[in-house]
Length: 365
Ligand SMILES: Cc1ncc(COP(=O)(O)O)c(C=O)c1O
Image 1: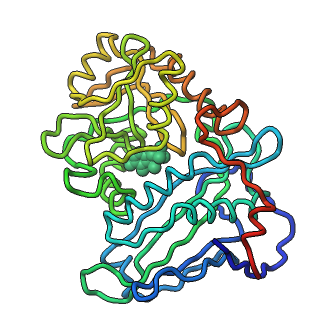
Image 2: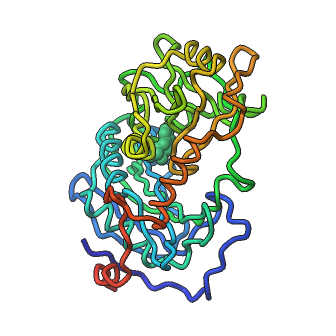
Image 3: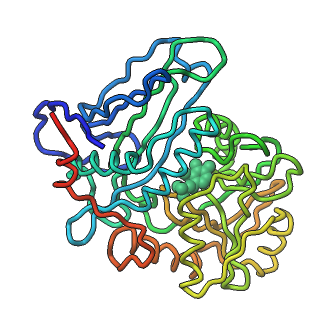
């Protein structure tokens, strides 16, 4: 696939924000590609980042056809930049698109689009432990109509944002609270898709948990309000007997995380058996209290692996182990980030080093 490069104003050398933070500062270029039901995908254009002009009646504002992805580019010790499993993001993006009645992209074009814009913006990939360039591809319905039906026009775009370490002050355990009243997603709904509405639906409970001092909500299944699904916008896992890693099986209302999948594939090679199961929240809390579960951790692109120090339910906290990051959590974090940052060999074929020359050969003026 070819990308049209627009001229850029000369804004001088890149100055990364300090501190880096997350998701508030964006690189100077963006990618945009439009789709019309009548003509398919148009030209992919990489040009100055800025505002998107949309009709006030655009589908995204009223019917909410919107999906996105989140992935990262990492600076390797040799100075090159690499992506982590962008093909998995392409597959999930297309699965989300199908669920939301939106057009799909050729997976190779999706990955080439990321590779090309990251290559052009590689000076924005920040150095340092835990720092990365966050990549946000998204697709929205743009047709101007208040009719409730699938849009006939769409915009695909990619934003890039330099991101600091999730844990500014070390590997800190988080507190999560079991959500009894609200659900994130229901069977037959859109929980397995990365669509904007899922996030809107999660905000009320998340804000309430934050007010009470918890960082995330532990979502239960929508039917019985009994089984553990996810923690905030991360997947969750429990360490039984100091070694076995058990995570909720994908139920259709859980987002199939790429970090979750990576952990499930790596853990056996690190000596930890893995199991996907239906996990009753009450049993889980009992097992934490009795010590059968020694560690709990969340998994997601933003933070990679996050230790959980306590779980609140019915006004009472159950502390996990000593309330600190445990050895299995630390080991997984180190093993996964070593691959992501290119500090170690990648036996799984997950990483793709971006090649600025090849990227330029995909561009025309
Ligand atoms: C609801 C939800 N669950 C889980 C995840 C973790 O997925 P991944 O590991 O692909 O980032 C995310 C983040 O994308 C999410 O938004």
